[in-house]
Image 1 (cartoon, rainbow, N blue to C red):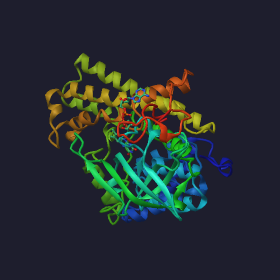
Image 2 (tube, protein in one colour):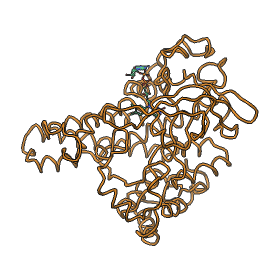
Image 3 (cartoon, rainbow, N blue to C red):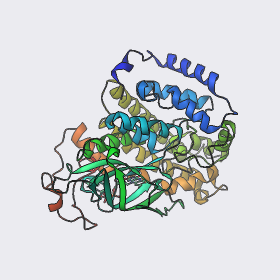
Image 4 (tube, rainbow, N blue to C red):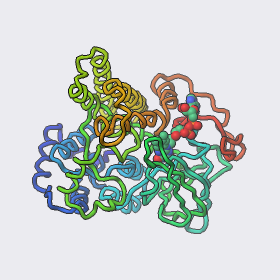
Length: 451
Ligand SMILES: Cc1cc2nc3c(=O)[nH]c(=O)nc-3n(C[C@H](O)[C@H](O)[C@H](O)COP(=O)(O)OP(=O)(O)OC[C@H]3O[C@@H](n4cnc5c(N)ncnc54)[C@H](O)[C@@H]3O)c2cc1C
């Protein structure tokens, strides 16, 4: 994502970046500031998204140095930029594929928390085989009219914009007739229905699109060229989801929503709330507790007097080891990105390990706690996080492309195995056999599909 003009200004090493970030934080962080004001200062400084180009609110740093800068922010107790799919997926995608005007309009508000984003990709008949999606967008003057249904849409209930994939040419083969839009969520044609998860939360939703409107100027990338844009989003999704686990220091960030109820609080009040709140309650699954790796469970085992049990020790060591390997794999991916390429297939390794870590964390936590692991709420171990994580653990193996799809990607792109046969390639989408929802084709895979 670094642009040519950034190259000459990249500080040579992490120490220099850390010093620069620390000095900036010391000068600008004021605990009495409104959180909304702090987020604006942070966005305009380039430290909110240090890996983004300087022209677009970043510092043009390679990912490893950007991570070092963000660690300094966390260590100083400063709130980070709004967490969520805006900064993780929409921003990087718009930087790569958006027009200058779209970059001006969309990038800063997602760093300041004015705009939250959701990902309108999956449909009842198109998850792994994402390219078979059936939501239609028809041109109507200077707008497109959108009809269809999306599902699993995380945080759609608080999103201002959706990264929408819709079919704009049904006569083209399935990968070639898709376009990518920034869809305004707050309009009558968009109905969001929450889905209840077994954790008790309703973080994802069904989204019904009935005559929803999107301006032609909000088409991101080429008309019918949305698949290339979607691949950028999916690659960033795999990289981010894999990198989120494995002993990282949790980074306190406001929720990536409209900052409702948070805008007026001071930085100090916000950070105090973060310390009180059960960590991770607002995320889908691999929450900050799992992201922190084996550390919380090692401390819990010591508190409960379980750290002398050889079986417990063995599982804690196994969890620590796999988290450490994942962290090194993340560094390898970052090094590849620093060499100039976009996120590559090695990101699938991290994504696959993230789902393995979530399961292992659950098994180890329940081994440490015994029956008390079932206690939900603040009276349960780790403030109820053990019970919550046990219920949330299946999520990472599904979202962002399932484990099976990641293995397909690794087989094809890392090991060089032949592509999975797909009889639908080359056929017009409208001629394909109806899928589970009776509207689209079956077969494929989220990176030959959600791939
Ligand atoms: C917590 C959570 C949050 C999510 N958030 C979002 C979101 O915000 N936006 C969004 O667009 N989507 C979201 N998703 C959807 C997610 O991306 C899909 O669930 C996922 O891609 C799988 O699609 P599917 O559920 O349709 O399963 P299917 O594609 O029907 O797959 C069913 C099973 O078949 C296997 N399978 C399918 N194809 C192959 C193949 N070619 N080879 C081998 N095995 C195969 C799969 O691995 C899976 O086990 C979320 C999902 C979850 C669980």
